Amino acid sequence: MSNNRFLELISRKLSGEATTEELGEIEEILSADAEASARFKLLHQYWNQRTNANQLSVEEAFEKLKAKLDAPINETPEKSNRPDKNLLFGVAAAASVILITGSLLFIKKNTGKDESTVQQSALIEKKNIKGVKSTMALPDGTKIWLNADTKIQYPKKFSGSTREVYLSGEAFFEVAKNPGKPFIIHLANGTVKVLGTSFNIRAYENEKFIETSVATGKVAFIPKPAIGRKQDTVFLTGDKKLRYLFTKEQAIVESTISKEDMAWIGGKLVFRGMSFDEIGVELERTFGKKIVFLSESARQFRLTGSFQNNSLEEILFYLSKSTEFSYKINNEEVLISDGSKELPQRVP
Image 1 (tube, rainbow, N blue to C red):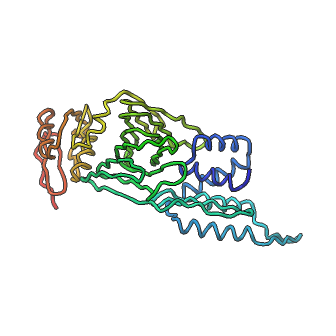
Image 2 (cartoon, one colour):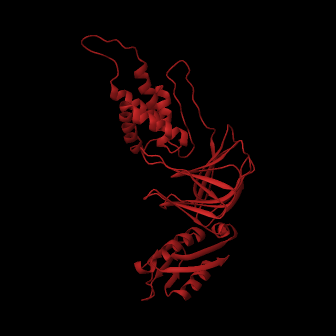
Image 3 (tube, one colour):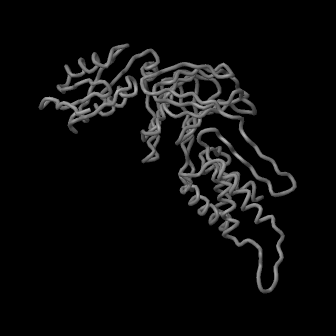
């Protein structure tokens, strides 16, 4: 196998973009080639240290290191100018540390006769702040409802054999059918692949789980694989929900009422035995006010309720009738206590 193919596969694996077939190919290489396995460990180390990297620095690093490799090799018995193996590993690491955040740029460097750069067209970004929801349509006719505190990135025009977008947050999709061009949603910790269906995805970066609920059709969820291990694809059909827990690398599939999972589209909030802490997250995103718990016990309250286009004050009022707690709504925040004492005045 060529060095370029190895770098391409490892880059896609580390960034979570590798297909099931590519992951299988990588596993075969690493198990059969000890040197490739050692290189991968070094690449993985570089990847974990990439926090402050950016697209430009990666390209510059690659070009500088590649130039050293391409320089003439004039070896003598006393001294050799040949780059050592650690430098080769460094070049591979620089090639692999290509960020798949913001505008996606995937670069494939060929050191043989044919050198080319494969670059995805610039991505358009749409972002909702807390308290704001929106709808949109993609170039292929796919309709999307974006929840509050959600970001999506997509190309101006879909090209190639797939339709790919990048999501952080929660959205409901009605995917335009095109059997010859699968629709792929990339998440921070997984991938959802469909042909033509409707489904809800919840994948906020500050939560430790992904939820996918299918209304119609069939959806394939592919978890982001742990290093050195394959992850099975999970298939879902109508009124089935998957919750994938990152910390446990566990996929839980259960029956659901898809209309409730997508109820937020119509301004409806449904809480079924949820902790007040979880409800607080929903209220904060929906209304844009910070929820502040002044007592830890209040966070653990289990509450149930269904609200259609109600105000924040109305929701808190009705919830407080089922479980006693105190609350105070200020300009930018909501104070919540377990009701055992009066709420203190907050100092601005």
